[in-house]
Image (cartoon, rainbow, N blue to C red; front, side, top):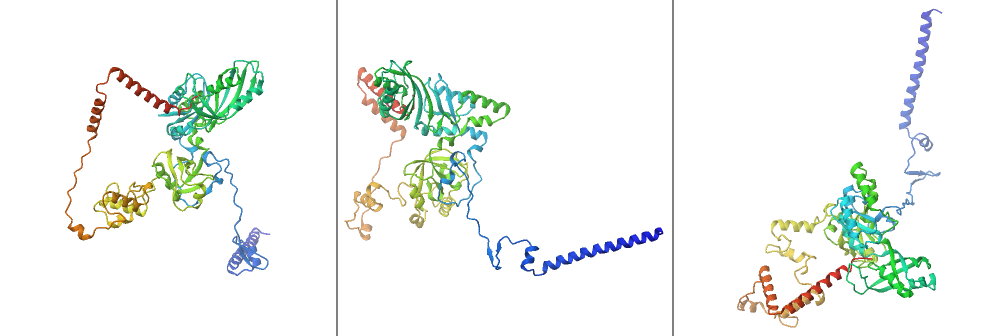
Length: 557
């Protein structure tokens, strides 16, 4: 076949094939367009269009809505850190609140805030005193304040809780917590009854005991009562006359005195040879106890290599000390008001723990697990679940710094009106009524923070209600009481004006101090040297007694 005929036949074949392909694509497009607008049957809809996820079709053609699953996701909050642990066990007052993007969880604070709100469970070495160890820590970490809860004698080792900066506010709360010790007792003779005799003596010295501090002690040697909760004999060697025992006791118990009493009770005598504290409050030997070298190495690593992981493992957040308290969760909008000393009211309550009793010490926390303050509960758990208004807790010790959360109080209608009246001069700068205050405001506004009552009348719980107190005050001043007749308007108008009685002006503070000094001189005028020495001696004894009473709260071993 010639070349021209071959090319013509090939072109016709390609044109025929291309036309067939174009026709096929046009047919597909028309089929798609027709199927799009054509009403489809049930079978076609199942084949061509995507299924409707919100409907369920049964065999009879009836459409039903898909019901949501009744299974709630199982969230295990037992592993949540610190004050958020077992969050699901808290009782819910309301779930309606607006989260505020302020604050953070205790473990995610920046390093400066983490250190300044941290505590260290320190393994105190033997020989240096507790105050020396705390001073060394302050110099190593370069912080402003440090404090420790529960003093240990120089020779005693073990758990010493050191609080840094803001955490020093929790020192008092940890000083009164229970303590546990392991002691080595040296007996002055062999026991005929052996280990059983010593175990019986330990069991006898349990409960409330009379103790007098040792001869060498930091406090005055006065007889006092301390409670030993439990004791247990760990090891005994009658040949070497040595015993090791564990004791759980109240803060301020002298284990040295307890060992002397054990020796007297056994009839052979004894003394304490060695002592170690294994628990202090919420911290024990297993809760990340560190040494002074650990703290120094962690600070060196942060200063030279900018590695803060070691320092974060050495220092714990202050919330670690509060895990034994019952929790009350507060809305974010109420946090800043509490840091300024406001009471927690029912509208600011989110969740609370079961078993709260009135006047029990609780911890107020945020939804992120931050400790706001230690408070005294004003309602029990039953009242919290049923009351619509009232005071939930009063602040005992504020922990969180102010203005970490934004200020959200003073935005209500009454507070806004009061602010406008102060600006316009209808109230004084303290919000109290003056001459320009409208009468309606004086009648309707109730200031519950005023000690004189909402309307200016003195509220005395010992003298009945407001009208009774006002009536009693009027009768005292010669005004008619309940049984007397009120004077008429004419009598009041025709009465002669009474001149005001001049009152003595109170002396100035300087004049009062000078008068007090002159009075003292006149009192001691003419006394002999012996009388003066006796008076000074009594004054010194009184001052020492006051100082020893204050030092009794300090825990020493």
